Image (cartoon, rainbow, N blue to C red; front, side, top):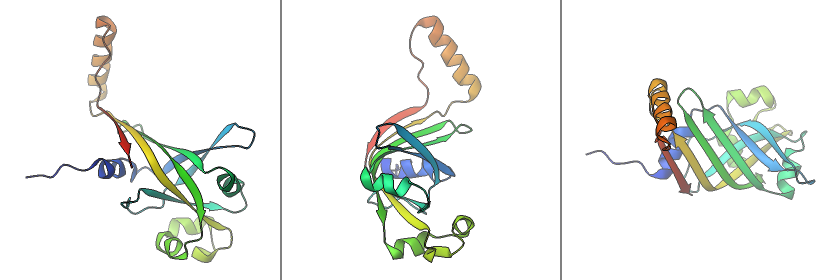
Length: 165
């Protein structure tokens, strides 16, 4: 008998192979700004925290210290998977986490390794997530959308779910 995955595990399954997420934060003037960042997690632990490395030379750390309310977007158009996450970001000085998460790809940006003085670790504590997972093939999607246009009823495509973490 197979055990159905929790919403938490399902969320991780959808984003774990997406190389970049777009992290959106608010500028002091009120405008929104997004940055492509690589998720450093090897898993999504029970606390629902996503990790990213950023450069101290950028303004991102300063912005997150001033206002940690963020949005994260992940998308995989080949699989028709779309994820929107809202959470609270903070700069972490957790040396154990930095050592554990540091990897050869991060070394391209931070040649000094896990102790590179330019490296900052961003933790995003997930508050809420929403996802759309369209399982139908492209021809089936087109057929359903055409049928909906004719019938006036919204097409039922894939799975849409909200997750509180």
